[in-house]
Length: 261
Image (tube, rainbow, N blue to C red):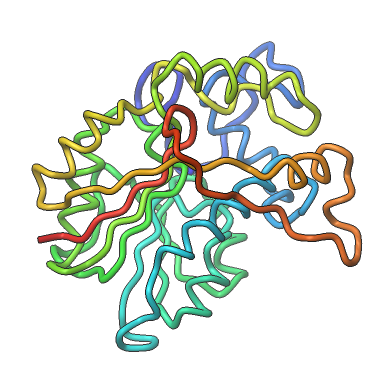
């Protein structure tokens, strides 16, 4: 994931030393050091980053198979440790990930995807190069949402698909996804900054201005997924994989998609 540093600037891709006074396992809000510290957790089914695997699977269900296998390009913004890689491969896409966290990109590359250290607000990619652009759990971490949306839409070809999931800027989202969630087992403290959660109306407007009309719905984890994760049973042989399912409310976790005109 691409993160904003506490002073409001986007972080560098290099691993950063722990902040002064920060205890191991606890981070400043939206601190990129979290992902360096948790670099071994990207594929752990009971680790603190496991829900990102569930979200990747939910995102993949919105994608058609590649029109030209191994040619059609999917650009993965804030790709993290490459959780979307097996889905992109199964659908036949050429998969390129972009992130600022070098330790995450090393994991992603080990999973068979191409990865580049780059800022999602200034993508080093040509116009209209991508058949699909995925922005999974990244928009709530950036300080310049209009710039990131503009870049995502710029690299998307006409007829290409934009897929997003993010946290909504609502009181309910801040309560459930931040204040309550961070008190639960296995949830890292400080992942999100409440000030950076995404205004749904603004997101629709920004995408529409760049030719992408979004459809939105809510997502939520199944109760069984959360229970198995919290109790450490998710990684046992025969245990079902964690899952996200659609829901009518977009007040917490939002999934959105649209085709570029």
